[in-house]
Each structure stands twice: as C-alpha cells, then as structure tokens.
Amino acid sequence: MDVYRPGKDPRPARRKDKDNPYEIFSVGINTDNPHFYVSFKDGQGVQICMEIDKAVFDLLDRFELDDLSFLNEWDRHIEHSELTEAALHARAIADIESVELTAYKSMRNEQLRRAIAALPETQRRRLVMYYFDGLTYEEIAERERCTHPAVIKSVKAAISKLKKYFFK
Picture (cartoon, helix red, strand yellow):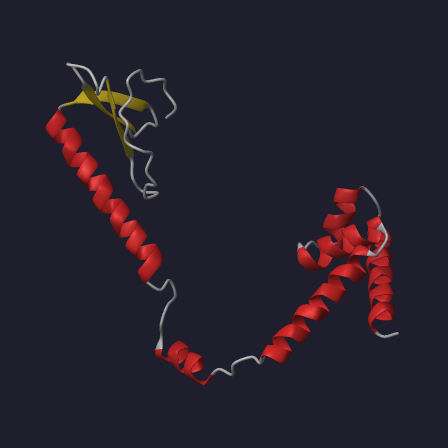
C-alpha cells in the first residue's frame, strides 16, 4: 500500500513472506502523540486500515522480524530440493565434468550463439521461437501473420545454414 504518511516511522521496508496478509506502520513517530496502524485486505478484498495500540504494534513488529529471520535462514541454510535415497545415491556416484569438457562446451555454445546471430533476422527469430521458446510452427505463423509452410521453410533453412557453419 503506497499511502503518504507524514512522520512515517523510520523502520526500513522489509521483505515479507508471500502469505503475510498485513502491513504495519506508524505515523508521527517523532512526536508526542504517535499513532500505530495495521493495514490488510478483508475477505471481500477491501483494504482495511485500523489504528492499534503500541503493544500490539510491537508484537506484530517482533513477529515480522522473526518471520524475516526464518526466511533468511531458509534461503541461506536449507537445501531446497527433495533428498531421496535415490537422489543422494545419484549425487554420490555422479561423474565430475572435467575442466576441458566444460571449456569445450562453453566454446561450442559461443560458436552456436555467433552462428545464430549470423542468420537473417526472420530465420533467427523463427528458429529461436521454435527451439528456445518452445512454440509450434502454427503459433509462430499466427504471431508473424504468415503461412505455416513459410515458417517451416524458414526454420529448416536456418538449420541448414547452421549445419554448414558447423560442418564445413
């Protein structure tokens, strides 16, 4: 909620869990009479803003800090994959790729990028949509306002040029 709040509290904006349904803020924090508020959407989606007392504000503020601490711990220290026995076994026996193979793959990928960049604009665009964006020939034809066979011909011509580039 982006509302102008004169004398807004100096607390920095915090990252929140996606399920956090409210926002707390204070107005006039540096005055003799500060006010504390909570803002949330009710069940009908109507934004509600109501004043709360300092004790409730402090409790919600502490909860946000604890929640943020948990989110940070989750991001930094907890593995985000399902560890099954099969997955652990696969990791344990997986071959480590050699530096030479990694460098070779990197060079081939760079060659492929250069070869695709050298294609005519229409062929490059259609090839990228087909292979990298996962669109069908029909979807590409619809986007480009052309015929389905024209797209097929263009993609096949691009592939032919790439083969010539790599297998001279």
